[in-house]
Image 1 (cartoon, helix red, strand yellow):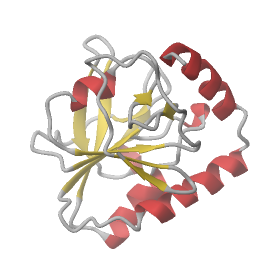
Image 2 (cartoon, rainbow, N blue to C red):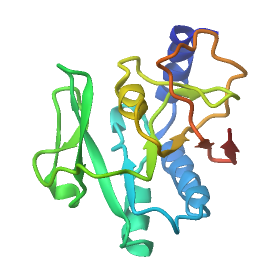
Image 3 (tube, rainbow, N blue to C red):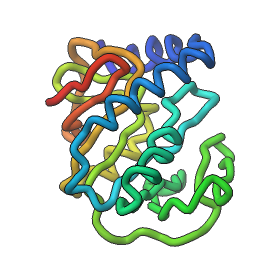
Length: 186
């Protein structure tokens, strides 16, 4: 299937989830995430969930990291839709977040992060058995990940599709993907 076909099917599938499903799946993602070895991680980029799109509640992961790994610096993105690039800010808590015109929680202002990143949690609609993902189609994460050497983990509520047919040279392969039932390694 093509990205457009997968995007349509996966978007509809996620849209039909009940709030209780999103909560339960998000907790199971956290359970598996918390089993990872984070001993070498100093900076982690975590996407902030778009609740209206039933994305995984990454605040559970952020809260867990804050309690169990306070030495890890958490950074969150702010999207620039004019350039299709992301700017990373140091996460200082939920009070500093506002909804953008696109309904995305972002830091209003704060400390910019300009150093390295060790791990990135990546939003997606779907992924395949080769480690490629389907997002919303704007390419923010593909651009962000293109030139950095970082451990890339996707978070998905659903199992992978066999293959995405229209992968191109700009698509960045993930290292792992966590679903509510298992961790896929690529």
